[in-house]
Image (cartoon, helix red, strand yellow):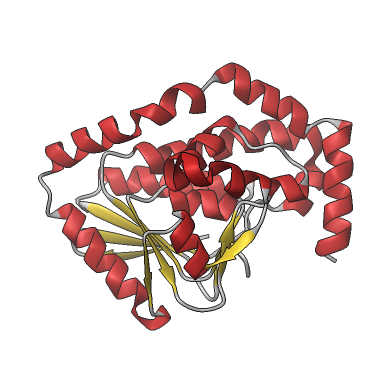
Length: 247
């Protein structure tokens, strides 16, 4: 599900779960495990990218429908855990979108301390409301943190996927590079962050991201979202969306 490549002080992780690295319970669990292993290793920074032409196409909606409420009750906390492990790791994380980063895939990409994108046909965005599902609270705060107050409502309400150039302007990514240069540039960026004294970097990162913890990790809000995702209304919206777009 995740390829691991050692580049000295930088660990390179590649999402490799099927054609689209769609987020399911198992991939999220494996991602948390990979970050645990990274933090227990001697690596000082990490790069997270994808394989082929897709970073991640987002949540595996078919699996969500097949699993029903029990699967949703396991999946949404796992998504929160994965985003939290990426967001709040004390060590530097660079995310490199080699292609499409859609919905949950975009959220995972936004967790990076430096977020790169490859020039080309890749699309980036959070179309959850077009699918019909509400955003988990941490996801809303992560988008707010990434694009800022000016672009927050557009990013959420338009439910659009954007070209890499537009994603750069909105703030989903920080830098665009040629596709063939993406991996090496991501490793270079990770090494630059790794050169900062670890205690200074960790302190600064914690202070920068502490604004996400309160509203993003609110248990009551998370429980409300789980109930909504398991409701008949959302199930009907998901069923119609999957039938229309994922034949």
